[in-house]
Image (cartoon, rainbow, N blue to C red; front, side):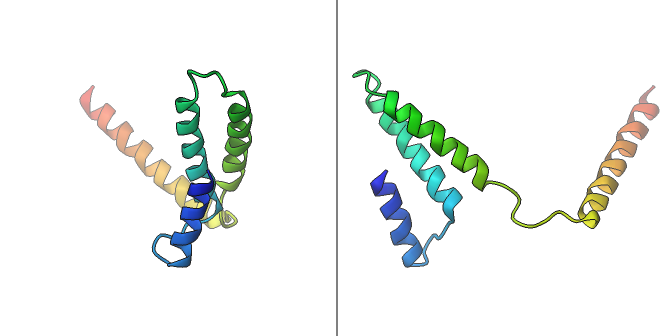
Length: 96
């Protein structure tokens, strides 16, 4: 995990592939998964499971909406849904 954190920091410092905390946590979670697979036969995965649960919760919390949702956003989505529903309805009525 330290390699993943250090690699993310290094790439962010070079402006090659900067990603935020959610990317860092996701990379750490993938690294943790690889560590769990490699230590599964030895049976030393209990501490790693606890860390994995914590990182999963952190990743879920960091993956939220980055800006507030406005009424206009909801109106646009509703209009798209209404058009899609009408197209499906017209197709099914035309086939019967």
